Image (cartoon, rainbow, N blue to C red):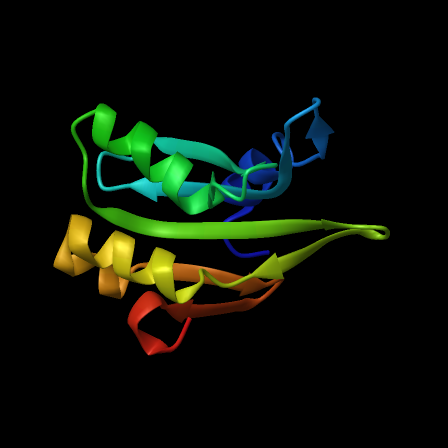
Length: 122
């Protein structure tokens, strides 16, 4: 399997959690930055319609650590059967590209043996 460490990192935080005004964890992202570190994040959905994608949460941790370049990422959505792979939405693609234009070359894990570049319609 491609990028096993990223997959395991994302699975480690995947899982729906809720309180009276929010739910989080139905989508998880793990990204590997140029410094070799893996950063994880989960989606956050608030009852007032605000929220953040898992990729943005993971990238926030990365930039807090002084990094902007993403080498590879995986996003997973929780399903009744376990999980499925997701590609970053258009907003997240642009978010990552504006952090560092080289992020358009980020490898996106799209399946057990499938990978695309972020800038290739991921």
